[in-house]
Image (cartoon, rainbow, N blue to C red; front, side, top):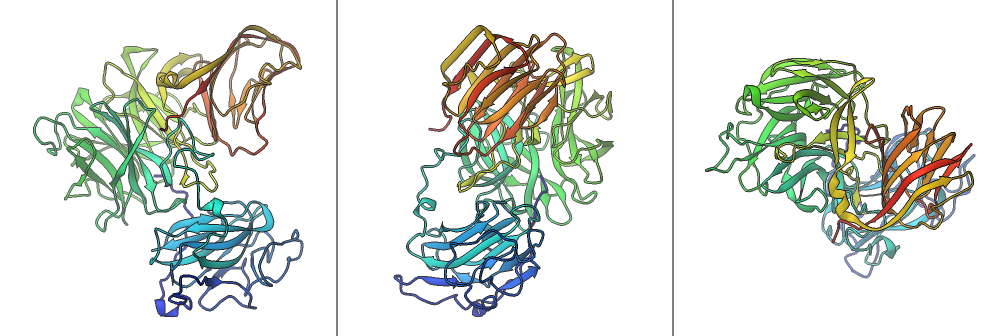
Length: 628
């Protein structure tokens, strides 16, 4: 599981110390949590760091842009020592007594860094940031499902760069929202920043894909999930969704939840135990077995199993099955090695760039095989065979890490021997925690990979984060040795609707055949002879995709080397509201990236610089949503 969490520790205090814990029972009366009108912070509020000083600000601070929109004379302002200062301001506990929590907020737009959080049991249940503006805007949180809960407010400034501060004022419980737009969002899956053909959870936070397995006509997608928070916290469960086609997903109840024995449920994998080596099966039907990190100090690896197609899960009573090795050893990925009739586990050891391999005959007892170094790589290993150039008699083994970098080599059931140094296939800025599906039928034979598109921005949405679109992996001989290729799965064609098509088109400097294009859901295929053109540039939803012929690089929210010896460029570009995934020259490289669309980012163009280029074919398919 990805470890990029900044959290603060809190010491619970008694309800008796909360000055606003049980006042104003009249439903018509607002309950003021804090108005920050004094020279010091309200009783019971505590600070850390230097950003908050000893009390509220009463005006714009030195060297700060003009601040307005606050109520009365005082407000929280962490620009006290400029943007480099950091700290927290935390309220005492109080009872949620009204339908909404209203407040005024301004300052930096840095989720999880400059924000105000509502905490219940020290978990982030609601969060908000400013919008890189010194004006304090009204904001509301819906508390209707949380009434009666005990909560606290945490105001956080953990950013040191531009807009590394927060302004906050007038925190009030009310039965009337200050900003109804925050309370009455559109129906789930139709929100304006909701990906329309990438998986995202209905609500809450999501990160690493876990337990990708195909069984009995269903693709299972498990994932790191906190349904009660929009921010990444260590309190993780395994969320669960299923699909018949890797396109249309149905989210199911939480599969694996934290408990006192295992602790938090971090990343792992799942397999079909066809031979019932574990003994978990009932009758003739093989069990599904999940292998996950039990993130209780010390970390260890554990099992759970299901005999009803993954709808309910039983944790193995004798967990853990692989005891603690070192530090936060985690993220087990298991695969069946048929030649030796053994299960093979790849595990991140969390010591530098060290990974491990283990073997087992029953998924319960594991033997160490080897340690493996992957410079520049951590977390979330995957290990699988692929035929070189489609030749099933010439299998190579691929070892990937969280960032998608990989080794190619040979594996005899006990030792993996890399044949070359670490390579890279994806150069986007949001490609992480990659995993592939197990148990896809031999008649299909594909190795399908999904990544967490880490770091995407979805402000004011009920969900946070999305998965990449599933991609088929293949291994090909190149002048630089065997290389992974990635291409979108063929099922994407089911989403095609209307089409725009150009062929045998001379593109001259100043031309733009896409000037009339509108929309934000596309599958774009381009086949271009560069000729003497210095650059070819697409602008899609305001985002630039450029091939530079001299530098031999492709830039698409990230930059990748892409040598072209015959002047021929092939691109497939997937566009989905908040993401662009670019695949070049039949999948030789890819760039998986997110962006936050702005109100004016509607531009579409295709241009050439320096000289004309020849468009052999340009096909743009508009796409329909996967959501009902």
